[in-house]
Image (cartoon, rainbow, N blue to C red; front, side, top):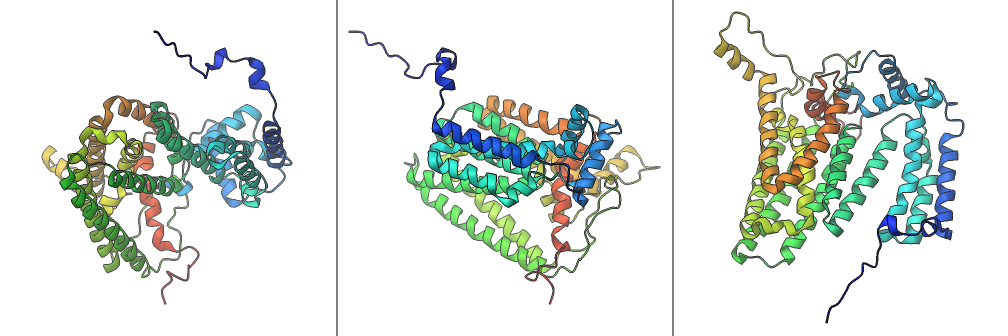
Length: 441
């Protein structure tokens, strides 16, 4: 007896057009929300005077539109909005209204994206969430403002959506979409590091939970894995605590910034305090315990660990953020990751010149960055060479194109991969608002 199975879900091309266009109350309500978003985000968009931040974004976007180029500076966050602003000037002309078109569109997209969260929030819950994004004063204000927030909201919603979809399906296309959105995230603002860190923390804890509930092929390694996990958590908490104590002694009150955003950036000339040194030591312990936990898990599960989707997601996030963390080990070595200037080598022989360069801040930073890139390549190959290559092509295709301003500014690679995080780490002791918790007594 032969049994024939028929796919109950026909392909998109086989579905009747009428079914796709059939209106329901849910679709009507989303349509009303999106139309309302267009009205509230675009009405009288150019009327408000430009703020200080907006004036910088429009000015340098206009320079790029005029053909004067643009060079990335971490002082002004990512490159994306400058390039998008220049593009909207090219399409619609240069004025206050057109300057705000891109953030306003992002504000509309954020309202509509909640539609795709129905499967987890429920149909009513997703509608309420969409309505709250629509009427939120914060969301409305920043959707009419040339800053990073409207972009970040959209990238965060897309990132979470694709993370959950990959956990559900383990389809490679969601990893590729994640590679794209994380590249756009990094090209928007350094807050991306915080979002990625939070997501990786969630995925890491989710993976640990799955591992602890799974049957271990080598049961004797389960307890050492647990010990390594708890040691990692304790060391991380200690590092954060000592880091806060270390910042408490900071006395800086001015922003570390040049008058010209294209001028070289430097970190404050200050040594590490006791709290910061203890924080670094605790971080090293955390890294060692974490590495031990990874070793025990891999020794037990081997390649079978990929049956846990959180592992693949951690690979995508971790591999492409690793080179951008260059500033951390460089600062731990007592070097300045923002000093890209090689030392003078006049009158030196070739070996002496190489020694002088690799002994300088620029040389140490280069060695650390290249080392982290090498680790990325090796781990990516061992993880899944095919998926890694596709993700790398997507991520760096976007990242390099944007940070070099479409291959017109080679220095954007250094400022994007190294400078973005390094400069904002230098801002931590500045205490712009004189926060009472960290202010010196």
